[in-house]
Image 1 (tube, helix red, strand yellow):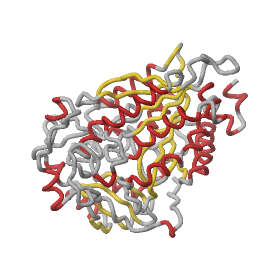
Image 2 (spheres, rainbow, N blue to C red; image 1 turned 180 degrees about the horizontal axis):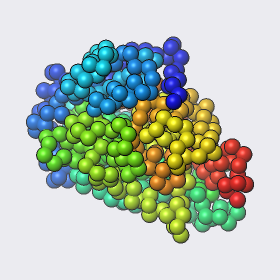
Image 3 (cartoon, rainbow, N blue to C red; image 1 turned 180 degrees about the vertical axis):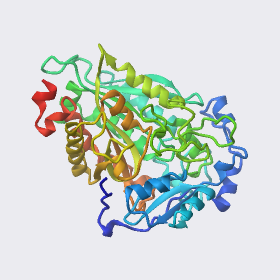
Image 4 (tube, rainbow, N blue to C red; image 1 turned 60 degrees about the horizontal axis):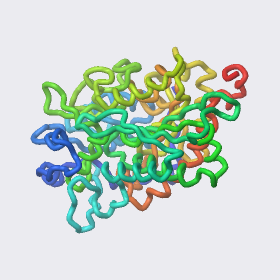
Length: 459
């Protein structure tokens, strides 16, 4: 087990701008919001009434845990570990879970509610607060994507790969030079997958998807590296895995701190599954998720029980052609903490069944290269704490896709807004990952080249 390597103490500032809603804010959130003009009937019916979990989630700083094992014990209470600091963690928990953390011997301090960015202006239901208007809600994001596809028909095409629980389209955008069917050597083009927004409150990740589409479309034929990659790669961008949760998080025109999807749970008032604990590899194996519907990390009733996970997993399986998975590498974008993570999350060991030393070394070498370009901290996922049923573990463990998680801005202090950074940072923080994305694309044809073993694995 390797300890988490924190950033410089000079970057560690008090988390003061994010937490899940409580107190007086809860009264506002409990008020019925007008039905979304964009949603389906099922979406309108999903507004909460008296579900206990939806009104008691809060953010806390837990002082004391410093090792991955200690952080895993905190997560085992049912709380979600949202950020790992030098000698503390930030969690989202209900009061009972927070009390269980206290009983572990740690100091637990409630943090403030999500930032109120209305600036004194009236909130618009199902939209971002007025001060954060540059963020795209679901309808705006889909309109932006449609415009990009229409502007670059030779490079981009969109397909609906399935529906969310509430009936919203989950789409994949294919980006490649359609005039070239193979690479310059005549081989099939390696495919690379970028997924975004598994967790509802992580809206900056949707902006990351929109940035990539804009960058690929505008720079093809102008930037040599982008042009070469679109000529020699097939890129798949899934911009929104959790549209229902994202719309719910801003349904009142303010922030709710919502994480999960909006799927009901049989026999419970608690709604939602943590999509990134619902993938069908080591699901529920190792204390890295919760079986309680009231937990932020509720794993669902079975692997792929969340329709959104099933949709994307089916899409990935559809890329097996002639018995070979065409997708070679992937990034799943999250916020926050500025990290580049690689598998496995279910075990502390660097190598395990399904992960050789060469696999691990290739993961780490390219992960560190990407982190060097964006200033993030690179590490194995379980260096933070144990997770099971995560997308990266499934993509590698089940499909042998070199899959990374990027935790975007801000850093672990959350001082830049935590899950809700102001919209002024969108352009800067999405462009910050341009070089990292290009490095992954350039290595995707043979990830083992990074460790000098191209001839052994990629001949």
